[in-house]
Length: 86
Image 1 (spheres, rainbow, N blue to C red):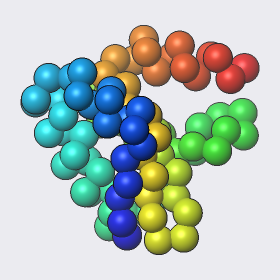
Image 2 (cartoon, rainbow, N blue to C red; image 1 turned 90 degrees about the vertical axis):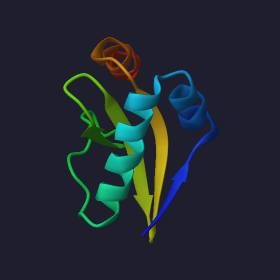
Image 3 (cartoon, rainbow, N blue to C red; image 1 turned 90 degrees about the horizontal axis):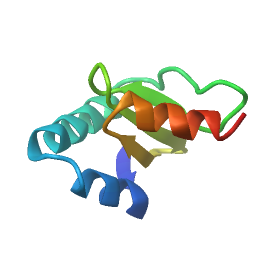
């Protein structure tokens, strides 16, 4: 499975420290070999993966490509995004 980061996800990763960036990249590689995990609630078209206790990654899988759309360093940023869809 291929991995593609959106421009927004790359920008968000660029604003994080190097250690957190490394965790996101390693987690994306790990997801290549695993089936999709949990879906976001309310019928949103994203899967969500916990990278750390606070950090989250949103991704979508189409055919044989995983598109990483957003990366959140803190749970607060993730919750703000999540509640904007309600």
